[in-house]
Length: 221
Image (cartoon, rainbow, N blue to C red):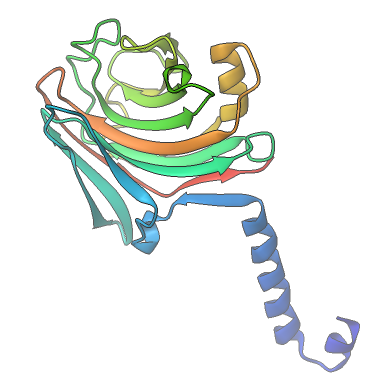
């Protein structure tokens, strides 16, 4: 590096430093969803028997590409399977936007278990029926920070990250410490993460919902 400066190639050295910095930043991040790169590689549709499917498409928004989800009384998701040790990558980063939350939402009963936007973290265990999940949601009525059990299974916990319509129509960036959220929800250290999913659903309430998802990544401390 010293010889580079002595040669007077300051711009060349600066460029090299920037490249090295970018590599070091990427080394601490696992890209899960690269929607801005128009890339859905590894994402698979997750459907439910007897349910209409939510429509997921890559669309332009504000000069970048994002994932748009449209549900008309429908429920389906997109999942990306991966194996990640959350001790090394505990932080989940993503951004999202909704037209509005769902006024008929009521997570206390199966008939109201709908959310305009969800980001799932799935944790496989020895037996399928012991699989656990954390669902980060944009809620209509749950106070931000609320942890509540899913009405479908005690192995899934719903966490309200946003609530109401005050931020509807605007992009909101989020960060959650998944490692600590799992410990709070289930009282133990998390096993290896097995997948990340997004879902916009309005089947239980028969409502309509539209949401957009930005890039998703897992980040080291």
